[in-house]
Length: 106
Length: 115
Image (cartoon, rainbow over all chains, first blue to last red; front, side, top):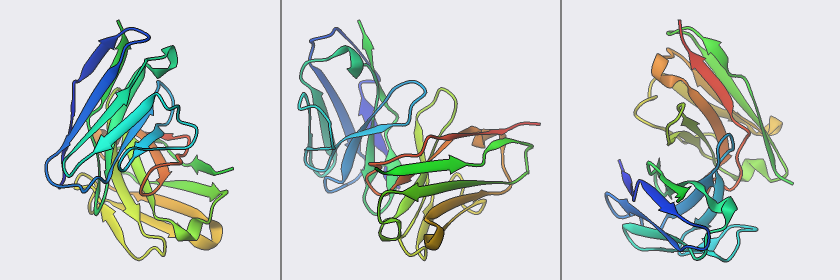
């Protein structure tokens, strides 16, 4: 079973700040990692997958990178609509989600 | 336009059963794996199960193995989650999603297990 650990648990930032979110897998995931954004009462939205591929209609202020066991999501300049909870997701031979990182307004 | 429309869910007593449905449109359903994910109140996402495009290969999270069954009807472009022996800790919003990326999700349906 692959376990994904996200850090930090919470990021308190202001609009315009840069956000860096991390996801570490307990074993190799061969870059099969994706990132989702979720806002209250809504289904998650796919943002980034694989080696930094943006999903449809995702703004270019979102970027990502992935390696065998790690992935990073960067939001270059936070917009008000970017505040919410972010999850990483492994989609290889099995599936798993990280526990989430909350990006909140400082 | 891709749609995943869920139905089912509701209140059930511990030990009871419930079936969730997810009807797809807007993509070639029979070509894709599908999955179910749940989210307990105030908690994070938990992957529950996935099923292969032809329906012959399935996998489950340990927390539901032996109690939940995923299946699909490609002619009706639908995927289902049969939930038996339900426990209080199965209370959650359940989502279906296009596997493996999760690029499309259903609207979610609340399952409440309570006496």
